[in-house]
Image 1 (tube, rainbow over the protein chains, first blue to last red):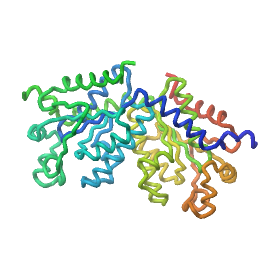
Image 2: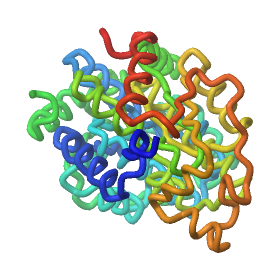
Image 3: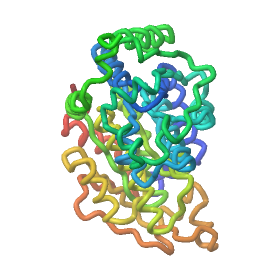
Length: 204
Length: 204
């Protein structure tokens, strides 16, 4: 019996080697694509459009969306600067798990603060991180107001709302800027797909 | 210009439909396989072995491992009953995201309390949840002590250690019990692979 169960008692470094091997073989074709921008700038729309395009080409991707995450994983968090940092930290950690497992990850988060986005970039490794700034003037985002959030914010019912009473720090060196104030969804999607193709993410 | 960007302003229900469509097409072949049991019972070893076997067959899986999660996503949590609940809640939420995205997920967590495991089962939906109880006598786990944690616990340096000064509630109706005290890793792995095959998880 001692022999029969001996292999469950292998030294720890053996399972660490197994984990590292798994990470190495998986990470090759994986990446975190991070969509940042104001509410209503089209982050979720674009991430879903990319997911669908990749699916058509037989490539699986996972969308992490701010609204979905805040109803689940981060339901205990609010919108203070500290809570936003924790929200992005958790999303970063989840993304790292996914990228390490070889899953192409599309994350759609306002993520207004540079330091939080940098945290994620460093956590994942800059070679596996693509920052896409969905750049759209506040007036246009507010005029869309798909979720009625700007109306709420103007009425004082949504405190710390980015663009209204919370700042948005523009990305300094994003891998891509998409002008979602003037491009269509299709045009925007094609630009992002070109970037992914350039990075070798789905033509293998 | 108004026309050009009109499609970013689609009503909210359109993106919800897109999300639901994505979940429906993805969930079909996905599941959360939950390994529970004492520290040293072989949960991580088995989940990595299953991941490797699936990889050989061209099926991607993601391993969520207690130690890894506690160094990242849940690094802010300790080992009180409340913190354990939050740890498992977060893992459950992450698993839900993954299963909804079509990713076969293998989770290796002591998860000593029935109510926390039930929470995850209900969150994922019982049809997409397989509970595997890695059953191994405490004496054997302690004699392995791969990470030296039992020694620490006996010395009073690891409070709330499951099996020593914290209870472990055995699963009432797990989908599979693996006697990791007497089976080898290979024998255990084959039994789990049979279960996954039975559930249609990799022969498509």
